[in-house]
Every structure is written in C-alpha cells, then in structure tokens.
Amino acid sequence: MPKAAIGKPIPAFKLEATGEIKISQQDLKGKNTVLYFYPKDNTPGCTREGQDFRDSYKKFQKLDTQIFGVSRDSLRTHCNFKDKHEFPFELITDPDEKLCNIFDVIKLKNMYGKKFQGIERSTFLIDKKGVLRQEWRKVKVDGHVDEVLTAVKNLK
Image (cartoon, rainbow, N blue to C red; front, side, top):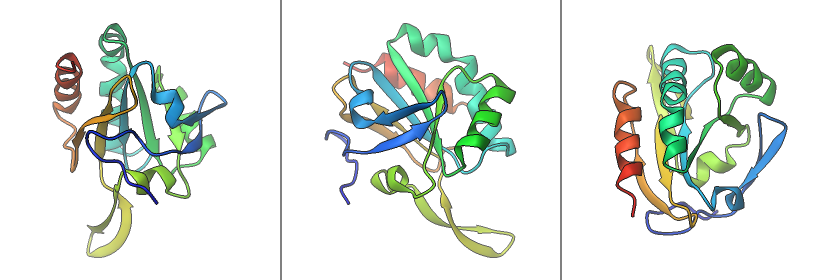
C-alpha cells in the first residue's frame, strides 16, 4: 500500500465520515486540509484536541482550510462524539486502518504494562493541490492547534 510522504500527493482512499458523506483524496483538493488522527472518541486527550480544533475552526476557515478528525471508532460513535462536543468538522471512520496505514500512524503502544497496536496522535497538513506539506507525530495536545494554525498561515 502506498504511503503518504512530504512533498507528494496523498495516495488514493475512500472512507465514510459523519454528515453521511464519503471522503476521498479528491476531497482534499481545492482547500488546505488538516487531517488529525487520534486514538479514541470520548477520551480526555482526544476530546481536548477536538475541542481545540473546534474553538479555532473559524480561524482555519478564514485561511481556506478544512479539518477532518480520524480514528478507528465506528460511524455511530463518531456521530455521538461530534454532536456532544459540537464539532463543526467531520470525523472520518477508519475501522480497517486504511488511512491509518497510508499515514503510518498505527504504532505499538504500552498502557499499564499492556502492549497493543493503536493510533499515535498525529496531524498532517495537506495543501490545496492535495500534496502533503507538513506532519506532526507523537503530538502533545497543549498548544498543538496553534502550531498547526501557524503552519497553515505559512503555506505558500
């Protein structure tokens, strides 16, 4: 399977999202796109990250930038999470890890001594032509959205 790489167009994919839509790499063209991957709906860090993107959403819109959150959660769970926190952007469901594998965000994690495969919190900035321009891996929530916003402002 092709992998996303900085300076290259995003490989082909098509997945379901909230809002009863399907998202493909074609939908990432025409506007800048922030694609943020997070481990799980309704967990503290993931909720705060989504709320931070929500609270800065209008600033991203002014920079002609769309936002999509991605996790392996079901569409139903995504819809509830989105509604509960009033996210103005859509959440992409990736239960088969297609998009996760394209962006190489599935990593071996360790929680309370138990090892498992999970999503490493990561964000990707894609330009209007559908080309990956910047990535953030092992994201810490505090201050992250401001950092992404600055990167969008600096896109040429």
